[in-house]
Figure (cartoon, helix red, strand yellow):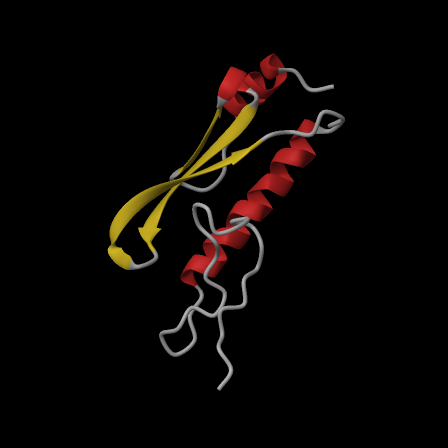
Length: 111
């Protein structure tokens, strides 16, 4: 079983790409907060920080592997933000209230 102390300790030891940081947060410190400072997908001349929050499952036995999987989800979201075909973003991800930000959304419209 993962404790908030385990999560806080691990978050303090993590590193990833430049501009990506980690901390334990949310209610009771039970969430892993991943902050990604990247170019804004809609205005690449500007930087923005996006927060991804993940709560480990109660039965998590390998916290390091779980964090790695969370990073893959965050990257899936960021890939959908930036990937374009002829200026269109066919897999632009969900945002606040639309659905899971980690689902691959097919936004192509058929004529």
